[in-house]
Length: 262
Image (cartoon, rainbow, N blue to C red):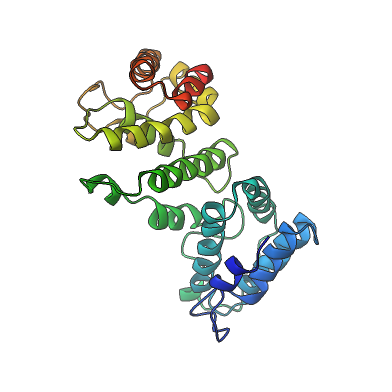
């Protein structure tokens, strides 16, 4: 594990208003180097928040650091990062009795459910701007990012970590399979991300279909499917048929893997 990524997250002058808290960076670095336990890392990385006079402000810094780690660090670290988030969720509620009400965490009491983490992750990484680019030059980089994002989100949702909703997965898959686009590059990237969601959360989607689960993410009108906001067995069958079409057209190995998951 290189020190470069951690150094980049720290402010040069150590000012936590411009970078991550040094204690948070040290705790994560030690965990990833197997120098401390998950429990010890969870306690150490949250201590700056629990001792802060403004935990609402400082919590955003921690969530930003963890979100960046999930997306930016080598993929083999994701499992341990998710385990760390679970360990943080299991910590006892901090004593903020001396903190001014205006400075308390805005999204609720810590740490159960990781209040605010999902909002921060979405704000930081769920941009659709890339789809609006007519000529995507760095196609491989964009695809790699979208697949990594899908992998992290799906594992968070399936693992019931941070209250990440399955709706994010429904949205990703529906955007890829239920609408047409005149940009084949965008479609290819969307399908790769959807395939990652399907591979990880395929069983969860089947449960949703069997229970006729409703989702805001499925309510949007799309060109190939317009039958409401409910996940159904009929919809799941449509997804399979659409994946078969795309597999035959592109030979995408990711699509084949996704089909096996359904």
